[in-house]
Length: 183
Image (tube, rainbow, N blue to C red; front, side, top):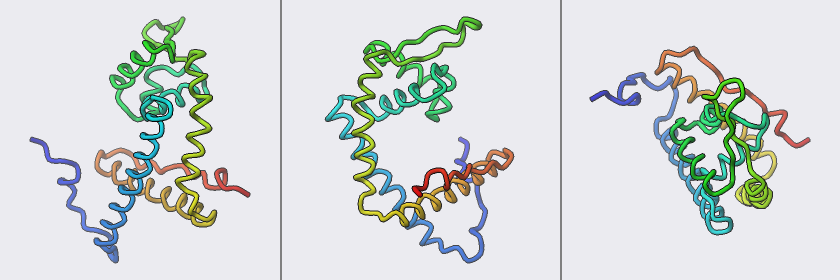
């Protein structure tokens, strides 16, 4: 049986890094993420009868460019094409999306929201935004901006670790801090 990527990594922590702080930070990040996701999942299920994966897929279908292919959705959602296909079949059966073959290549299917899907998102998105605002209501703008920057640095570090593991060229996370800050 192959060892996991973590088990194969025998790289010592950089000098001066506090292993306990790294672990506590990781656990706090996971606990915070789980708390937020649980709140969002519960709200979506109770108020709209949809799951978080359904909401995520509908939002990605709505995002420009319109009519993403199944492969593009897989990349946007960071899940397998099989998962996207299963979810698309269920959403199509509920009348929320429609799949259309590409006129130049019948192997490609483009996905569009139906009027029912658009109507659902029109109701869900503002409530979802309010939930996100509520999750962050106790944070002042400076702390929120700092968290955004720190999470960007963490993402870049995680991508670098993944690239070291896979032997891929190092790709850093794009920095969009100025675009997302309120002036």
